[in-house]
Image 1 (cartoon, rainbow, N blue to C red):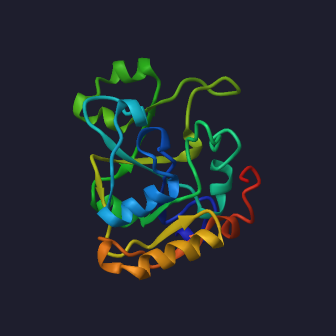
Image 2: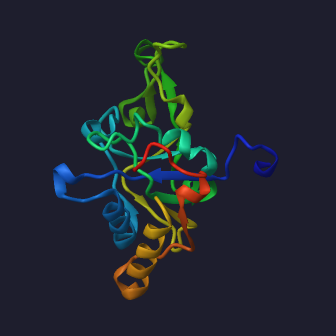
Length: 201
């Protein structure tokens, strides 16, 4: 049971980042866009390093209070962010029912030896070696779903950076609720949940 294991979570998290160089959207605006459309757009080889011919939507299986270790200095470089403190929380049960599965962490040689079909390469993440110079993202405990991911009618929660962002998003959602395909049940500020995000201004 999840409540007996502090290292496990019943939830999956999709974090956004800014795409200002491509479309002028901040991470916050991308979160609003997700709620407007009711789905998370998938990534391919260029944006998400997804192998094979299919795009996929990515999540991480990390306890919410541990997100501060993902939102660290290197991952949140404002010029080249991998993640920012904005995102959507869904239950693992819902994600599983929509085809999301834990990724397969494999070296390139293992991938070739196992002969995984092209149709399933979207599930594979490169993992080479163990130690200081390893290549891998095991700490994210990534899950993926093939293609775009349709959110539940009422997503469990959305994550924002701080209380000011929570107030701002709440105001946007209540000003014109009919504009949004999905309205979250809660808005959680990560600076409170994670007891601060020290690398963020």
